[in-house]
Image: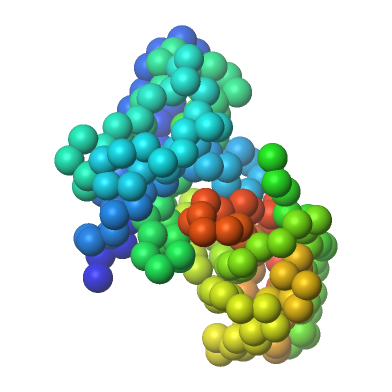
Amino acid sequence: EAGVAQSPRYKIIEKRQSVAFWCNPISGHATLYWYQQILGQGPKLLIQFQNNGVVDDSQLPKDRFSAERLKGVDSTLKIQPAKLEDSAVYLCASSSKRVQFFGPGTRLTVL
Amino acid sequence: GQQLNQSPQSMFIQEGEDVSMNCTSSSIFNTWLWYKQEPGEGPVLLIALYKAGELTSNGRLTAQFGITRKDSFLNISASIPSDVGIYFCAGSQGGSEKLVFGKGTKLTVNP
C-alpha cells in the first residue's frame, strides 16, 4: 500500500513570496490533515478535511494560509505572502480508524 | 490549547540499555499514539492505544494507556543504534480524530 505522498520535499523562498505544497493521501482515506512542525516541536494541526469539506481550521492563519481539497482526494496548502516565521516542515497526514499516517513532509525555508 | 507534557526531553544511552519515556496531560484522552520521527522524514506510527489500562507491545517496544486516561508511557528494551530518533506521544479526545502532540523525546544511542 502506497503511503502519503508530498511534494516538493524542500522549498526555499524569500519573504513575501508565495508557495504551495501538494499532498496525495493513502487511497481510501477520507480524512486529510495539514500540520506545521517548527524545529524542536511536535506537529501542530493547521487544517483537517473530511472528504472535500473542512472539519477544523481553527489554527490556520487565514490571512496568509489557504488549503483546498477539491475532489476529496489530493490537497494543496498555500502560503501567501510568506513570513520568516513560516519556516518549518509542513506535514500531510491521512487517517483510518483514528490512526494518522504521515507523509515525509516539505521543509520550507523563508529567507 | 491542550498540551501534552512529554519527558524526558532528551536521552543519551548505551546500546543494550532499556529506555522509558512518558507523556502526561491535565485532561482525559481516549486515544494515545506513539510515533518515531527520523531526520528528514515524517512521524511513523509505533503503537496505538485505545483503552485505559491497555498494554501493547511491538517487538522491543511496549506502551501503556494510563488508568486515569491522562498519561501514557513507552518503553524500549535492549536499545540498538537504529532506535535513534525523536519519539512523540499524541492523543485525541472525545470523538475527534484531532491529535495533540507532545514536544518529543530525542533518543541518542551510543554503540
